[in-house]
Length: 209
Image (cartoon, rainbow, N blue to C red; front, side):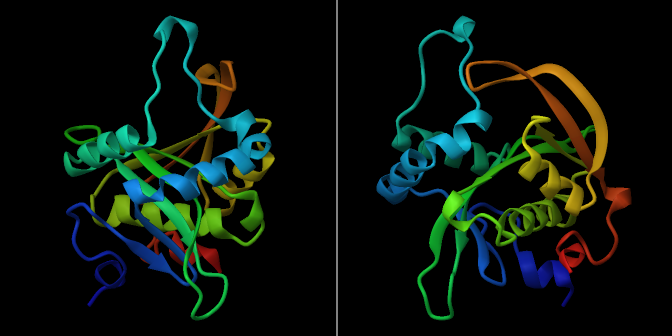
């Protein structure tokens, strides 16, 4: 059995991945309380990097249950991979909800690309959770979905997130002015990308060291 098959198995949603203490599992409606607690506690930590709705988009926003329903429908349709990141702090401990990893904009046909976005609870920062989660997600996209390109757009001020992409060997492609509406304004982002030709047989999980 190949490494890809051992790690990932089937490609039909729902998909759960695990590498060491770090896991990726589907979002669930029952996570609402703990998700709200984490987001509230991390408001200052994640706020500068959170996407927001521009004024021209009008009023909107979703409840947590609406978000889960929409994410699940999109995942089943093959348009996205909405995961929560989990972290098991000690053997035998229950996995803690530690963040979010979303693969969005999945496109097939002649493009075969997608974009990754992620955040990690400050409580668990510095433990290698984000690189591991991104590596697993990327290996699934390349090894199972057979995508050709995966992008990560990061604000140039977000040094921690920049280091995650660089650690995994994502290629810096350049600055895109006013790329996304984040923290209340249109913000510049640095685009990182990898293509299937740049991934060795060990995958990105193998680059973790």
